[in-house]
Image 1 (cartoon, rainbow, N blue to C red):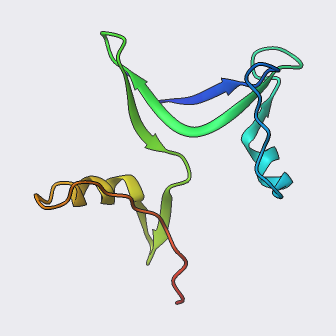
Image 2 (image 1 turned 90 degrees about the vertical axis):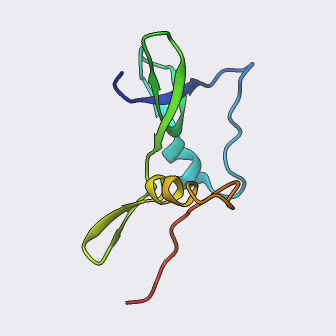
Length: 100
């Protein structure tokens, strides 16, 4: 029932080529020596939960919380509230830089 980070093993058969032209971003997504020395995993940034029936559910996304006027604002929570509106079928919320 506790949230856990989804990681995927990077192998010759399941490669992660990285982000085009963004070596630093690629390095941030790679986790080394997770279970044993020399292994390599991709950090999805997704938190998942497994229930008592072994169903897997999306819980949250790491890094999608922003500070606004001293408050933490979660893009997931904002999307959940907007999704309650009857005329809204799909919601995507992301943070942008706002001056001031």
